[in-house]
Amino acid sequence: MTIGNYIQAKLNRFHLSMGNDELDVILSADNLTSESEYIPSHDVIVKKALITVIPELLLAPDLSQGDFSIKRNIAGVRAYYSLLCKELGMPDLLSPEVSYDVNDKSDLW
Image (cartoon, rainbow, N blue to C red; front, side):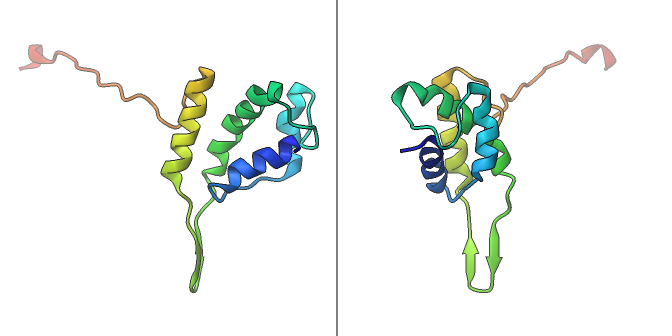
């Protein structure tokens, strides 16, 4: 199985896809292409590629025309993205931590 086929299979679970040219650009940083054979030592590289591409793919709109529609499970994609980020110790850019700042304004009363 090639790296491109593996990544496409992972994305197809969520009804997402990307071209091999885009994938080649992402993988070129690690001297790989979408046609490179997938081996277990490429696991981290492939997961980093998925983390890189998922936020952009989430921007694609849902499609509907007449009785035909394609809806994406955005919550499922975000959960998968978060899982990958935690597994690799990378920041989860899709789930920003909520910061509640409490400021003392009692001197204004």
